[in-house]
Image (cartoon, rainbow, N blue to C red; front, side, top):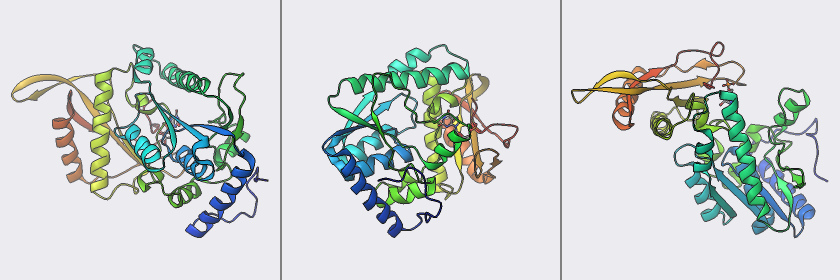
Length: 327
Ligand code: XMP
């Protein structure tokens, strides 16, 4: 029987050999438990759900049905990577749903951060449930729950972040193959399952995605500016050896404009705010000291390549008093 709780004396999975042993054991358990039945998984492309997908693909292949919901708030290139890795390379049974218009239409004009979060979360469940209803014979729901999620929900710090929220008539049995692992262990296991390191070692990304980095009411043009500026920041951090070194970095485009000059003409455009922080547990955070040369290069690229942006600002605020995200 699969361990329901992490054994006290479990050795931390830090080597390929330990990861391989874990994978072998899980694959066997999963095959025994699932048999010929079908499993459904909401695959976001984040570390945990990707590793769960990879382990289930190894165990049961086409009996796993992955649903990737693109809510329009993902980073540049993310939906494409999910399709490339899972459908093209791993030959997974992947349903891709582009729900961008649905989400953005519901979010139009909504300024309150908590209401935005609720709309995104609620709509996600609705889209996922709609897809699930179209499928026959699903008996299991796989989730990327990890050990800290269990500990935190037991301590009452957060509601179990994966706990479904699906309509009550959809009572699937849960499959949580990485439930007893810490995040660093999930990454080692993911690498051994053949996932690209960019996917396994990627920085944290909030469920509501770029929606919380487009403060206030989300508009398509401002969202596009956040996405493009974020892509430039990630590319430059990677080129300058900061990828994997800085814990989390991203851009925010606030909902105000200022006067500027472009090609001798007056322009009235948004600023891009850059945030780059280091932390151990996200409860407190320190600001990364970005080299000034890199900063100047980022300003040049962002103001010339991102439509509607005439300034770049750097947020020097640690947490506290600033939270990491803006909403
Ligand atoms: P804050 O902004 O609270 O963020 O300092 C701490 C960490 O949590 C991430 N974060 C979220 N992750 N759903 C998530 O899955 C969310 O709604 C959410 N809000 C914040 C944030 O990116 C940072 O790493």
